[in-house]
Image 1: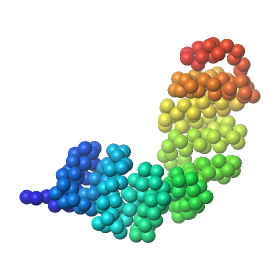
Image 2 (image 1 turned 90 degrees about the horizontal axis):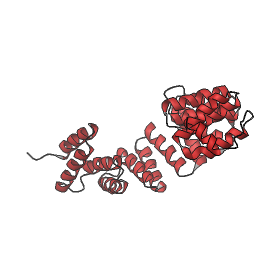
Image 3 (image 1 turned 90 degrees about the vertical axis):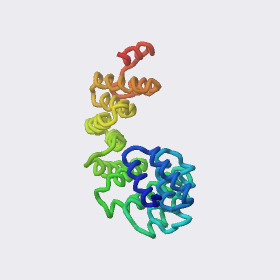
Image 4 (image 1 turned 180 degrees about the vertical axis):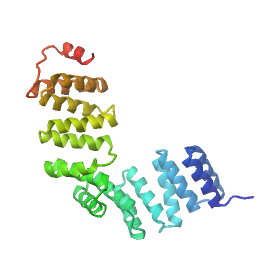
Length: 269
């Protein structure tokens, strides 16, 4: 019996969700060979291709789907993500605005805020993240992004407030790192140490967190702990040697190393 598009979509979606992306792709391609331009198959194939980082092909298929179903909100959302992945921010925003008009959902507003920020429209992105946080006070990403904006503006009090909200749940290492930066700039060295240690616990290869942990330990009067952190940063990223040497000599509790080879030897222990 000949499979319908719905049958193929169900099978392909099940394969994709089970981690068999190539099988899902093949099913969609076979279905489209029999039903060229079928919008459901084109949509699903675009999603599979995008997950496989084939942005050009994904864009071609999502546009084919939209040509048949221009008012499908889910397809517009995917088209926005794909266009952003291609660096076409104007097209991405057009798709996302249409998706919001068709079906205003949290996910779409978040995607628009991300797109505005990546496009460099920072005032508009800040407004978008602020609107999301006003409606969803516990929205972690919105709080984290607003914290980063406040930090870049030099408003450390606001940055700390936003970022402390962002780490109340399971937060990624990048958010803990940003909180560490804010606390470090406020000279709250022990609190900064805790944030950097949390970032490293989540992402053990976070070289910048190890470097900054060394700096705050040094500033708080723990030179041995600082050297341990610097050694970790050096192992993770040897090209950080210059930054480590600078930190060692410039901090209020610094150490002077006249022999570069000796410092490298100590860091390699």
